[in-house]
Image (cartoon, rainbow, N blue to C red; front, side, top):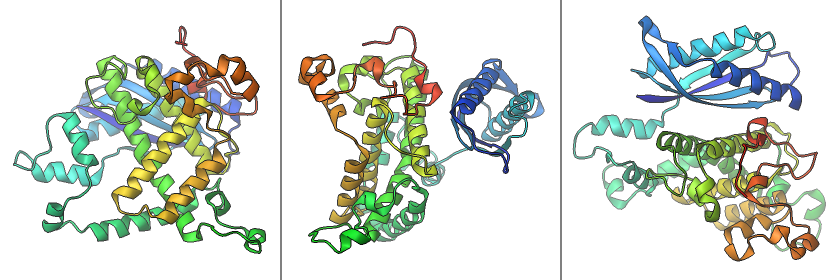
Length: 377
């Protein structure tokens, strides 16, 4: 069975955070290390096949997703912990890093549902597309009659989101439309309440986890089918929501680059270092994150006018412009290369430029910035 093992590897506690050059070096060392491994010896000599890896390095360490084929979850976790530990020890620059976490992440509610249903009438559908649709549905009245308490669940999720709000360190309440001290004395008819802003901030962090997990699944689907989003038979969570005109270019390699971009962008959101969106891919990534946030809030009945206004204010403040929306309009194809686009100062938006920084001051993760040969226009 295929398992996705998540590994958090951290730099030593008293060490200074890595600069961009050090992070690029760490990515290269880790990826080269995995490149030399085909299989891992698990417990009792059980062989665990290494299928794929995704490496995202941030100032304080690295987040790894390791795809393995193993006989059991425990074998997968133990084998990956062993090989990552060995990779770190073999490198002088990474030898002092510590593995903080190495585990297969399961969605507890869905896992419990599958275990409880077993082979009975409530077993989840075998077809993956049907499962996706089922998990995306809002609870029904029938669910309520069988013990599902929608209000209690909504309140629990709301509490989780509010607790997560402080993790969005790059954005003070004013970014969500809350008036600062000077503005409070002015004549402004509408402002977002601090509580609505806090819920919106926490919802963004909450939705980030969902978005990243689902993009990992998209990567795995395209990798297994060796195809593109346009030709994929399996269900995709998010790649189909990118501009349709380039769907034939959304292969597994692109999906990995886009996923790393999402992780790099949201890491800057939460570690306090975010300044500006770096490239077209990040603009599209934020669009997906905002959609996921709105859907999640709506699912639990938490998307009221105040929270919606807070998210709108956040989007207005983070986006420098909305030129990326033209990618969804075929009539605007090529505007960035036209005289009109030049006059308007439109940044290059051709597919090959999506991961190119807007200028030298913008950060794009090295794993995403590596432009593959023969990239489509």
